[in-house]
Image 1: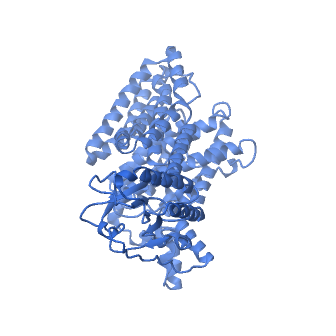
Image 2 (image 1 turned 90 degrees about the horizontal axis):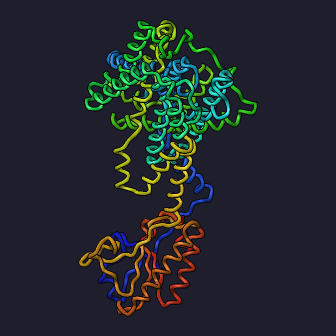
Length: 619
């Protein structure tokens, strides 16, 4: 078998070279010998430490290494010493702004998770403080989010009723939060963040849209004033419950809900069209809560069919470490729910952090973010908080308000603390219908139709993934739809691995360039040469397919022999796109070599790289 590794062309030599018997051949030089241990070390390093986080410690004195270590674990020590009054002025404005959004959203999302409304405020107090110390994003605004709240509430409610057994439900919610944080921190500590990448963009678009529909439908109970509502989450039971209980509809509730929902959607639209008016949509939920509370109090609307939150406990977060349940029949449920909510909230938080980091030209360390969010939830589970992460809507407001550092999270947390200590009695008359309207207006932004249309134009298979995730969430369950979408995405990856792209190359006349015959109509076949390009690693998963596909190329060439007026002399493989070959790949080439030689031809590998650990030398 011949090898060619010509350095002055992208592909095999030009046509004129083939027309002569003499052809210069350069044998591929195998890479320098490495021990098995060194190869394993290199592989593990590239797998788990592609960013080489320890490179900053090289050549540094011991004292400097200790300082860098502390800054790596606690990013606040990196930017804290240079913090100035100018930065604080920007952060205090953005912190107060996101607090005005976090307070009503915290109460609303807690109801979505079927936990007491006060827990939503607790979750907007402690977690932001922890993230400000451990997090590396300047823009991420931490707190409860709609999707994680929905998943936690729906999965736990399948086995435990939040109405009949509220204490056990709350215990499981805190335990779920602990396990969610544990999984998140473990992924970061073990450098396994690439697992989150299995939630592709298409999967998330479909899942978020489906979850937004489910969340919105669940709010029909509050928006219509229905008292007897289904506990199921999927579309058919919810709509059935709505139209089978029309006698419970309250016109007062519907009128108030419609007015405030329109107000919230209009303010959101204004802020989207004019980003400088971000404060309009940021303050709208708090304004809605204040106005609706005043209306209910003034007209005694709680006596006319409009349900209200009722009394909320005043004071800071009570400890909840004694409520964590690490034994019993519901442990498996807590672990499963923690895993699902942990991965979903982690994916959302990292995606949001990276989005705004790109806008402001700084980097966010994904693994450090995983540890920060994970530890934040583990601490939160012991201080009466449920699953929290960085929400896109809140972080967008934080960014547009001019946040410079994570101090904005501290300002938000202090504002929530003041609310918990002194302002809780003011929320006693807040109507449930307004909280439902706040949730609907917030989740509407999760339905990204333009992105779905763009994916339809680019990749039809990814669009199928969107549809599967969307309809799976709506008609099956939240976790069922997610599992289906992830399964289809993995199937796509396996299909690409086991059926790699293989093309026939031809020469573009007058040049030494060889390109795909089907994509470049001017390219021409070389008589006597079958030139193929494999654009994937060659391994046990695809070697059988490649063998069958190459033999079919050869048969098709020989079948057209009378047209080509030249018998097959060389079967050439352009190998520049082959990043690796395993033992099955070596066997594939050996068997192919024998087959080609029986046909009176010769097998030639062109531009095989040294990335195959010298296995081409073995061939």
